[in-house]
Amino acid sequence: VADGPRTLLGIDIGGTKVAAAVATDDGSVRSFGRIPTLVEQGPDATIGRIVELARSVLAEAGVTVDDLAGVGVGCGGPLDPVAGVIHDPPGLAGWHAIPLVARLEAAFGIPVHLDNDANAAALGEHRFGAGRGCTDVLYVTVSTGVGGGAVLGGRLHQGANASAAEIGHTSVDIHGRRCTCGRRGCLEAYASGTAIAARAREGLLSGRSSSLADVPGAPAAIRAEHVAFHAAAGDALAGEVWDEAIEVLGEGIANAINTFDPQVVVLGGGVTNAGEQLIGPVRRIATAGAFHPPGASVEVVLAALGERVGVLGAVAVALAAIDGPAGGAGAVAPHARATVGNDA
Ligand SMILES: [Zn+2]
Image 1: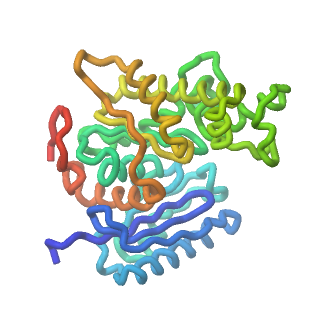
Image 2: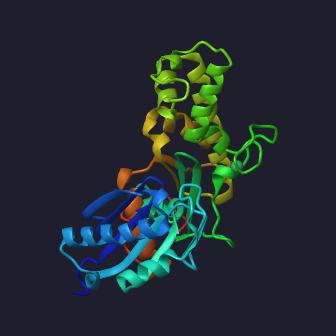
Image 3: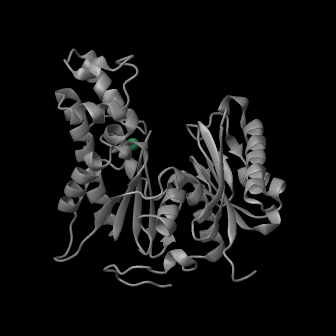
């Protein structure tokens, strides 16, 4: 069956949900399942239920472990992708030095490949999504935090400590807001969903008049999507918070473009559900700020994989590990772009 599509298992582990899917190497999802993480039960219980979930999606797809070309896992970091060990991610309390890959390999009996969720999403969008056909893709996730992953020259750029492309913790204001990392002016301190909501709450609590006060449960219940909605409706406070988040994000992405020179910047994550209200101005600010020779261009686009990005990213992690840097369909350009070359 060497000529047929390869079948892979992808597992996406988050702080609230775990998803698993069986997919083929062209990105077609054959089965999908999702369970709550129930992190309070501890890593042993969660890993046990992840194995059960995997067995159920395999059964639903009508395949066994013996049919799999590989297993990929995306998980919130920090983690060590080489050793396969999870190191206390903020969303997974109690996951201290957990040898996840060894545990899953013992359960499945075949090699398992791990990376952090932002790198997995970068690989997924590169191989199956909005960065398909490109050699140089920067992926930026804007959700609870701001994260990133860079595919450069067709392969994921890990860095010396597997923490490359953490653009959420690049600063655009040395006197700016204090970030969770301790630094001032990080993108994450303005543009993350957490920061957008916090700044709107601060505005309300300082006595600003705003339609955000009408959100049921406000100010505690205010979320980034409320800010986006009320900004679009013309509310001044929501507009200021949203516009500054967009400006910081756009300028930070311009910095990243100047650092990595990607063909395309792909934005995903929950905050990007705002759609054109986000990507339009971010694209304008980022491309205006990028330092480029005349005639050069970079695309700034929304992610294409939607809710499937977690599991397809995990599948792409496995494919990248199995095929090496230049292998697989993801490295073959299906449509022409202005490019410096393709080493496939
Ligand atoms: Zn930071």
